[in-house]
Every structure is written in C-alpha cells, then in structure tokens.
Length: 90
Image (cartoon, rainbow, N blue to C red):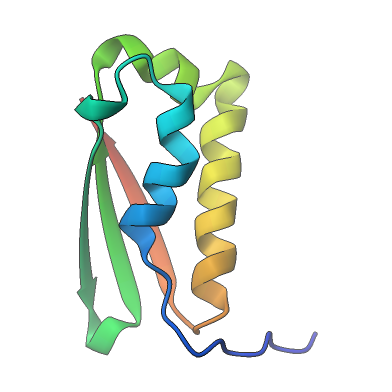
C-alpha cells in the first residue's frame, strides 16, 4: 500500500468538524470544537460538544453518522501523517 501524498496546508480540524456536524444540528451555535495537538503536531485530539437534543442526529442509526465523520477526519489526518482522535462531550 502506498502512502498518500502530503498536501501543502495542514487540515483545519475545527473547521472540518464544523462543516460536517453543523448541518445535522437543530442549534448549530451550540457546537463547540476544541483542538489540541501533541508530539509536534503528529497527534490531534478534538473535543466536540453540542446540545444534548442533537446527539441522536450526530451519532445516527447504529453510530453510522459519527463513524463516517471520524473516517473523514482520519483521511484528512493521514494526508499529513497525523493521527486524529475525536471525543464527544455533552
């Protein structure tokens, strides 16, 4: 398996999460995303919170929606040899 080519600009993970999650929310203004990187930017932790009433919409049936969001984040991270982890808080 070949590695993906690195892009010139690093992903803006909070903006990406906002882009992916906001359309699912009844109250998009309640969305908060905090990002922290370690190991020289190689690992990124995202902390995401939103209104508790929107939890079902974000997670989706059987967790499919949240898994798809995580997959997109991981794909963006892979292009820069990074690892990303997203935690959901209520």
